[in-house]
Amino acid sequence: MALFFPHPEAPAAKQALQLHPDIKWLRSPLPYSLDHINCYLLRDGDGWCIVDTGMNNDAARQNWLDVIEAELEGAPITRVFVTHHHPDHVGLAGWLCDSRRIRLFMTQTEYLYAAAFGGAPRSQPFWEASAYFDENGIADSDRKIILGNTDYTHLVSELPGSFHQLLDKETIKIGSHHWEAITTGGHAPEHLCLYCADLDILISGDQVLPGITSNVSVTPIQPTANPLQHWLDAHAEVEARVPDSVLVLPAHQLPFTGLHERLNAVVEHHHERLDALQALCDQPRTAQQLTTRLFKRELDTFQNFMAVGECVAHLHYLLHQKRINRVLTDGVYWYRQC
Image (cartoon, rainbow, N blue to C red; front, side):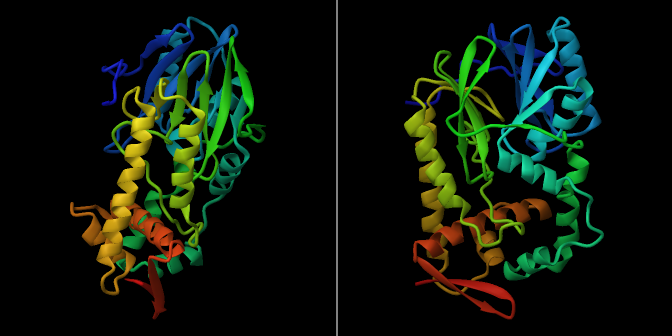
């Protein structure tokens, strides 16, 4: 059965679309080819709470001010929930919380990641980043561009000094509804989804998107990680805990039904990638060489960096499965079939 999109038109700029008497959907602008993030307002007593905030820039701030004035009829913002630490999700959490003196709700790992990345920027890249670039064959000429595009401090407002920690399987009362916290790994270390059984709704963040797959990468922060294993485990966990009947409210694109079909399609996609990557390891190749062969379209410098990270995630999974091996030669990893 194909996915179904009950709301085929996204809300207009600076407006919100009513999905349910207690749920509004709005979009915050992003300065990328994926030009939006979906944010949600949940009725919370006499006010509304926010789920995900958008990136820290003038356009996104003004968008929130316009939506709050136009849509909330003077009702207050009560609290802010953030699914994970990526800038398009947490970017305006500090601004929203501090300006209204309201509490931030996140999982502990995601809050600490955001706090760590939001510290004072280094005058020089950390040596581990250089090692990561070397090991994966990324060109010297690309490195400055990559580091410039990953300056977290410009993309995220100063984080609140405290937060309410959310735990997996915890029940959170928001207004008259109870939501279950579901935490997953892979895309982010402790990503939060919110599931409401009585509404039959899942706010999925980046865990489940209808038409694109979230980036699952090995990064310079955790260069030995196996995030794809966590990602595949997460899909099985969500499928086991959330019924197929739910309306999925994702962080990007359109709300949809057909959760289990989409979860299975994403898992199948990754296994196809794994098979293709293993086949490309018929002779020794670096992660960059494999990325160039795996992604056949033209990639800009930052897209290539993200693609290499995703390629390495798949390579690490194959290594753990003993389907390939690797050797370190002159500071560069070379991968080959077993």
